[in-house]
Image 1 (tube, one colour):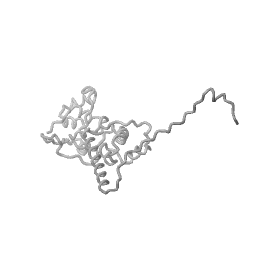
Image 2 (cartoon, rainbow, N blue to C red):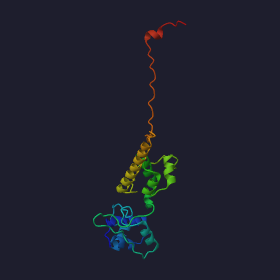
Image 3 (cartoon, rainbow, N blue to C red):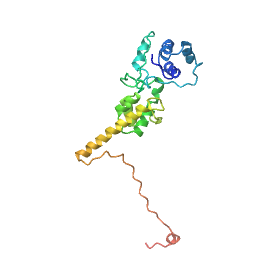
Length: 220
């Protein structure tokens, strides 16, 4: 069986975010069942932040759901190549977001829209496990939480890894560059113009008054 990285932190996450039994968690994390029970009670691993085994590629969402449906099922972790440390099995479908993290998604979307406008809505949706209508609402500032949204890096929120974020940004930048090259090749002279910046207000003319002008008699 593949050894799980950070087994206690992984157990913390599985206890908080899944419906797995203590036995299933102990077998998957190679921990004694009493140790898992202690983690659930707060007597063991106090202060340890949970590590998402789905985000770091140690297991697929479908495998967890299968185990939740069958208490007797023993989860099988993804296997890794010893040289590349990349999971052999690839994740399919939308990214799974823990319930405890889903309320942070609007903050992450706002951060991506503001800092990486080249990233498309489908890319954002796949990256942090959200929906296109939610992204559209935040772009158009019609989201019901728009007044309380605080743009925050999705990596720091635990919604994706830095590797995943960098890959999406790189892919979006390359696509934008190709689109620009295509426009240049067509000879249309068009460019992907940056957002316009507001023009500074014209300076109002100064009116100077002197004692002589104030007390000079009117000629009308």
